[in-house]
Image (cartoon, rainbow, N blue to C red; front, side, top):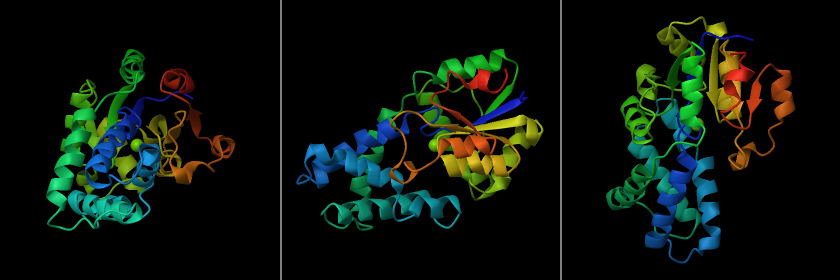
Length: 244
Ligand SMILES: [Mg+2]
């Protein structure tokens, strides 16, 4: 396998978004859910990342906006863990704490910058395809010291996001590479790796240790490999896995 281009996801692929949400949810718990003991904070994080209400999925289908999906997730979190409902009135203060803490947390993974450098050194084109707004992801990458990789497709580019195949095809088009000679690297086995493969790209599932969501623990990496998907525990092995 040799590719001409590599498209990457941002959240939990290049930037430690899970770590950021952990900090933000801790701040929320201290302020709004004081009866929840600290040893249950991982449950708050798992709830947030799994999105049991499916609100972020609705956002990526273009059915709602970023603030609305976040308010509804906040309300479901509170209801699940015995807090007050989060209403349209109370959400502004909640979100100032949650999102403010989250934005201050943005940091890369230890292997992110080196992997991007290695891809550039190998002569392949690189870019980002993400399910959040383009402007947000540009700010996030800049804060994480990864501003050298361009955000080619955000959820606002087409009005919908992954796993729709158009999103991956548009990423390759903007990168200027053939779909079949373009890899897509992301942390979600279905929304990222399998969807990219189904769109005709080389799908790469980044299965970082301890990073799976609650609904991903059952995922069979061998079955994904059997379908031609590359499975990696970190970004360090990415160039070699792509034959670069
Ligand atoms: Mg991700």
